[in-house]
Every structure is written in C-alpha cells, then in structure tokens.
Image (tube, rainbow over all chains, first blue to last red):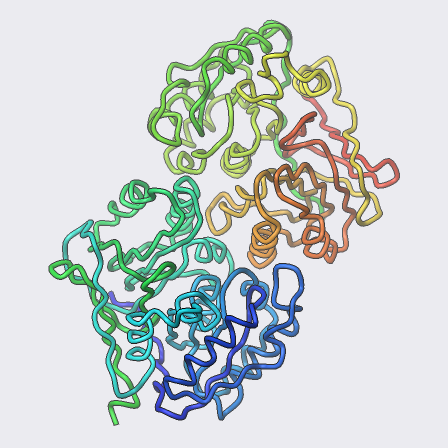
Length: 308
Length: 308
C-alpha cells in the first residue's frame, strides 16, 4: 500500500517572492545577509520577515513572534515560498500556536528548511497536506559561508525549487538492503521525529519511504530514538529507508543497520542530505524512488506547474 | 481525580534475597563488587544474575540475555527485590521482549533502579500494575564509591526498602508554585519519559504527582522534551510537579518553570533525587505528598507488610 501523496505546491519562477522566517534558534545577521544575497542571485525577490533577528535565549525571539512571522508569510498571497533561516531548536514550540485553519485557507506554497524544521514539515503534512522541501537554509554554512555557497548544494537546491528544472538523483555510499522502493517520502531529522512521537504531528511511515539523518547524537541516543519510533509504530509499513548524514554522531551505522534492516525493505546509506557539505535537497511528501542498483534516492514529483 | 494507586509490594526484612540485574549499560565489576558488599552489609542476601557482567557495545550484553536475567529474577519466588546494577542505556530495548503475562503471574516484588530504569518503572506500572522504587543502584558512585557509600543516600534507601522503617520526607530547595498535592507518584528521568511517548509505556500524569530529573541534557533539550510531554498529553491532569536533580544540564530552571508552571499545580524544585549526591529514594506508584510549606516530597505508602 502506498501512502497518501501530499499536494506538491507550484515550484518557483525567476522573480518570485520568497519570505525568510526564523521558527527555531537565533539567526546570525552576517550569515543571513550572505544567504539572502545568494537567494537574490538565483533570481528570487527575497523578503525578510520583521522578527527574524529577534533573540530570546536559545530561541529567535518569543514563540508568539516566531509563529506570527511564519503564519503571515504563509498566508501572504504574494509569497511563493517560506524559507527558514536556520534550524537549532524551537519549531516544536510553535505547533500548537499556529492558526491551522487560516493557514489551510492560504494557497499552498513551498516551505524550505531542514534539521529542527522537520517539526514544521511534519505538521504541515499532517495539518495542511502539503509536500515541502528539506534542504539547506540561507543563514547556515552551506549557503552562507564567507567563501560563498557550496556549489553542488546550491545547484541541487535550485533544481529542486525552480519549475523549469528537475533535481538529479542523490547518490548514496552504501546499500544495506537491496531492492527497489517507490512512494511518497517522509521523515527528516531523527531527533525531531522522535520528539514528535505521541503528539498529533507524529510521522506515520505506512506506505512511504523514510528519510533519516541527525547531527551530534551519540550512537546510544540514535538507538534510543529508533527504538522509540519502532515501539510507537511510526515505522510500520515503511516501503524503504534512505539514510542521510550523521555528522558528529560517532559511528551510528551499527545501530542503524541493527534496528532498521529487520524492517526488510530497501535501504541505502550515505546520502549527502541533512547536515555537512554538500547538502542536497529532498521533497518530503512527493514521490521518491530508492534504487539500490545505483544506490540513489530520486525525487519524482509531478509538478502541477510544469504539467501545464 | 486521583490516579490509580499501584500495588505496593511487600517491603524487605533482614535476610531477604535480592537479585542484581543489568538491563541497561555495561557494569563495572569493581563497582559492582563494592555495591554488592553494601547491600550485604545492610542485611540482604545478594544474588548476582549470571549475565550481569556481559558486554556488547553500549549495552550489558544482548537484549535477549538482559531480558532473560530480568525475567528470571522477577519470576523467582525466593527473590524479594530485583535490583538494577546501573542505568546508562538499553532498558527500552527490553520492553517488547519481556513475557509480561509470565511476569504478571509472579508475586509482585520490589524493582529498584533509576535513570534509564525509568523505562522499566513505567512498563512495570503499565503492564504489571506495581509500584517500584526509584533510587540509587549498587554499581553507581553513590553506593559504590571507593570511599564507601554516601551515608544519607544509603540511610534513605534503607528506610524506603525495609518494612520496619518509613522514609523521611525529602526536602527541596525552591518552591515554584505554592500549594498542597497528594496522589500517586509517577515520572522519573525526563529523557526516558520523552523516549516512551507514543509507545504503550508512556506516562499518564492524570491524577498523579510527577517527578522529573535528568543528567547531561542542555536546556534546549529539556525544553524540547517538556514540549513533547505537553503536546503528547502526558502531563494532562497532573496534581503536582516535583523536580529532582539536573546534573550537567546547565541552568534548566528557566525552561522548567516556563513550561511547567502554567500547569497551575503545586511545584517544588531542588529535590536530591535522580543523579548527584546525595541521592534519595522515591516510591513510584505509591501515594506521595508535595507540601510547599516545608518544600518537601513525602512518600506515604501504605505497606501491606506493615499493615498486618
């Protein structure tokens, strides 16, 4: 059984307006300026929402302010994509504060972000039924490095975002379980997926391919989080597993294989998705293919804009 | 509404047999020998289960072996208490491997442990309906230090374990929300309670007092875990909150107060329960009282053995 395919919003055209928000941790203004410039140079009309540089401890300002920026950007009919400046922590705090009916009444658009933004991807999938873009963010190193953006990551992001292009398959480094899987992609950052267990925003892998990555988590923590996803039923019925980067996680492959290979579905590892460089982009909620002959993950989305 | 009171097993008498198990991380043999000696000196007949010194990466041997030791100890009619050697990580991996009907058929007895053992306390409460003892463990520093056990911790453990005694109230350091709460105690280590969200073993605070402590978690992680418990409904209907130690967690009081004070129930902090020294004992599942006049948590359990 294949899981429900989410609504894939229209991809971008040159000159489209995108709005930068900060749903999670505090944003460095220098990095943000660099990343904004990168987005401008690829042809976008970049608006930075008013509270993006706010700070409150480990958060980019108050919950109410972060939620307001996100909601206003999403509901603005002139905005074609909402771009999260960075991750960190704080997105889960917004989930019960957003006015979901109001956001559901707005035209679906692109949400771009990764890491902590996994919480928003899940919530947007559950509450709004929209596919969204898991990729590099403008106030993070991959796009905002002083030496310039990492070229392969930027190129893959552009081909994922713009309507006139299609993203190339992302090649991994290791086949764990051979086979072919095709279905909507779900998942993202493991810590966030674990932190959503038991909430209304929990991942359900049934009929889907699961993407997993993390940063700075010891193998025993990776093990505990996988155990939670398994015991919570979040991985029941998964069609395949695509493992991204595990930066600063020691050597987690032992526990990843031990816990996930028994699912008995195609599984590849070493995809440059998540943290680290290069950092490729994946569309969550759109169709994807795991092919173990080429050890790759390919986004197959049918784009309503290009289908015209 | 007061939550269901669990069955409080008969407390110990001098000469009773207790069995040491290792459900979580690898056990240091030198510490175990010291802790075993301490338990012997307080009058117990200490048996060490056969697989306690096994090792497998970050675990004390295979899941099957750890589960077998735990189950055999629990089902042995001559054993009056099952004592976990230490925490670490690994208890959640056992929860789906234990033969709960077989364990439910055995006479309820004391389970002693803390930290990672929170997973067992919760599972024993949910599956077996028994109260259990959250306190120091024999292969950990509080009891197994080379200089000898920490006296106040050992005295409080003895008064909690032995039938002829009653544990003194545990005094905290700070009143967050004034008031009086009385009801069964639940909770334990926050990381484990978060890791149980969405599983059949999740905490339900309804009608109960919630004990929370943790070790080595940054405030943003404490925040994320509290947010998960709140969003998963695990804290709905809590009667009170008792905060233990937060060793190596930076300064988490800001997020603890911000997230938990809105529950509007009596709340005290600074209880020496969890990690660090001294480390007092609490009975999970038995009645407890939060009194903010004395800033204390008192275990009130009605002991079937002493009631005779």
